[in-house]
Image 1 (cartoon, rainbow, N blue to C red):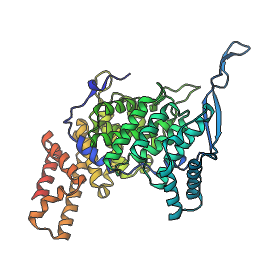
Image 2 (image 1 turned 180 degrees about the horizontal axis):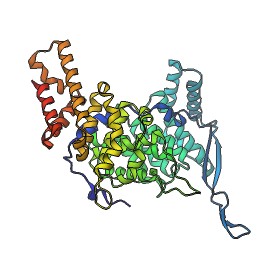
Image 3 (image 1 turned 180 degrees about the vertical axis):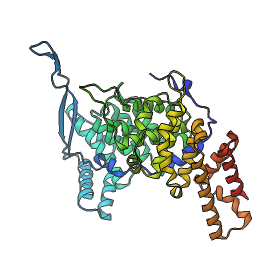
Image 4 (image 1 turned 45 degrees about the horizontal axis):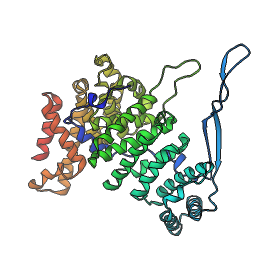
Length: 456
């Protein structure tokens, strides 16, 4: 197991940490198709698998051991009749999702949501618990569909009750999918902070080994997405350090479980999906922004490396920039023996991405430039090797600024606000200032020149 966070903490003054958090917050969220498997489910019929408690080790005629059906297929059919509020919400959800997207149907759904009380999730008999959990997942999905955030009290009560009641990875995934929406950067900080705190309590309340151990690969990926957003919220709201540290520990465990294991003839190593890789990339960046190191970097680099031009073509410029930054951070981390990655290893991993990005200098946004510069700042070897790309990016931004000034015909005394009028530009100014002071090299000179030209 990894050492405690206190032994792995990065200095709070790590250059680029603040800038990276600002621009990561503005990055596009994962595409919707990744969530629709859970987000639009009405829980009338749910199918999942669970461990078979009666499964026993058996022996064949030749004495070999075998397991008799370790998992069993489960199906639940939720009929909400008998509880008026449950039935009304389920009907409104199905109607709006499948048949009628009118404002009237939307308002009916919102009204049904506001009528729900926490007692509607209670169960009187053990066999009804499946129904209550299905309805809780339906309620959270309906809140997303109708744009009605649960009250802080309701969210706290739900997330305190659910950990002991969620009986499958599928239902965990449904809850995590909804939480990913409630923790978006666009949500109000106070509301998101309360949700993040409730989420931490939920993770702590889960049975030992359930999170992340019993989750599917999709469930682990969703868990990382929610943890990343919760860490962002806690950083912005100055949340409790204990909550943040607990999330970072669960995050590290989840990342390690997603790393490929040594394949065997009977259990080949699973293939990582595109969403998995991009989520791991963002997770590495958020760990760096949170000021903690990455003790499993050696396991992650082969998983994230993209060797072919076709593979890079599938990624957007923003995703390529974050991939470069994450790999720079991972390669800058010493392995368990204390030795550093060689320059040859750096070039083998990073050269294809740099060539790909160098061809797209003209389409980089300010956020992407900041992410690339933070990656170079985090990795001394990359900073020494790659000089053309950052200089070209800064030249491009300088041209954009000059064109903007020319169009707006700004006066000289108004120009200094150009680097302070936007969070992204403020992050750029901060990281360039750090680059100019960190060392005496071509990148430091380019950063200082850019800042001077922008202020004059």
